[in-house]
Amino acid sequence: MTHDAIGRITVRACGRDWSLCRAGDLEELWQAMDDTAPGAEDRIPYWAELWPAGIMLADWLGGQAARIAGRRCLDVGCGLGLTAMAGAAAGARVVAMDLMPEPLAHARDNARENGVPGILFTRLDWRNPAFRSKSFEFIWGGDIVYEKRFFDPLERLFSHALSPGGRIWLGLARRDVSGAVWEFLGQRGWRAERLAIREVVHQGRPAQVALWEITRPSDTSDAAPPEDDCAAGQRS
Image (cartoon, rainbow, N blue to C red; front, side):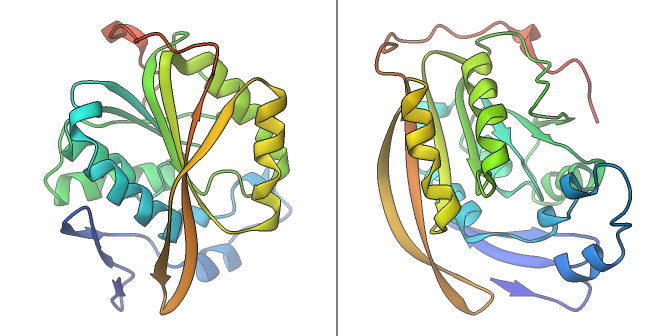
């Protein structure tokens, strides 16, 4: 992964190079924030970085074309758009959501620049999902459970949006707070299985990242393709 002077990131994932534009790096964007504004803690620009978990997840999605091609898939916290593009390039019908307009604008530009059409980028708060129930056969996200306050709203999103027999894939860097999510999900009736673990170099430093699959043991039926009108009611 490389960074140029204007903030563009070049990264290799799922067998190809991706060029990702952004407004600046995390530190400079954070310093420019008004920390006293309402909801400021939800608007820290973590989206401006490409995290190791996202790179590993993109690699995984690139190898899942046989499973996700033609399927309705939800990318949660899409950031700069890498995992949404990886899924769409593998043939998935991707809806990519984020809370703020800035990452969505960059993600949309990145998809166009990298030649990946067909992604629906939508501004959405995962605490209030505006999707039809049971809309998505696959849901994924990279490093989205880095705070405990996210566990409950994400679990409610998964329960609402995942279709019967569906799968959730999470890429997670090793972090103490994230480890607590598995007990939390288990108490809500989910089963988590670690599918892979690898070292990803991020900004010149290695990070250990795991890929997890989350399912409901009581729900193993094959999912029927959801209807086309399940997309979010609000587009960015």
